[in-house]
Length: 70
Image (cartoon, rainbow, N blue to C red; front, side, top):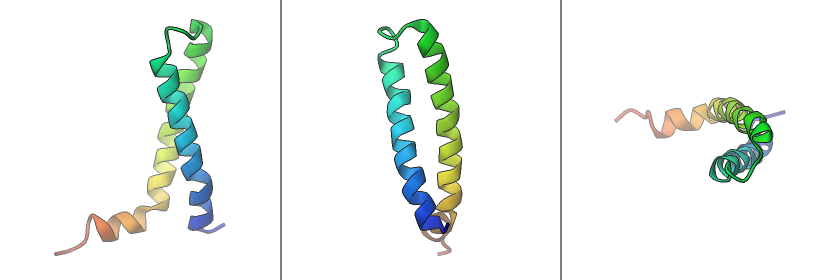
C-alpha cells in the first residue's frame, strides 16, 4: 500500500474520530457517564495515534512546504 492509498483510509478516520470526540465533549451532559467515560478517552487516544500516522504519511510534503530553505 502506498502513501496515497493509506491517506485515503487515514483521513476519513481522522475526521470521524474527531467528530466522535467533539460530539462526546459537547454533549457530555446528555450521555450517560458510564458510556462517556469509555468513549471520550478512547476517541482521544485514537485521535492522537491517527494524527501521528497522518503526519508521518505527509512528512515529505511538510518538509518541502513548511521547512523549505530560503
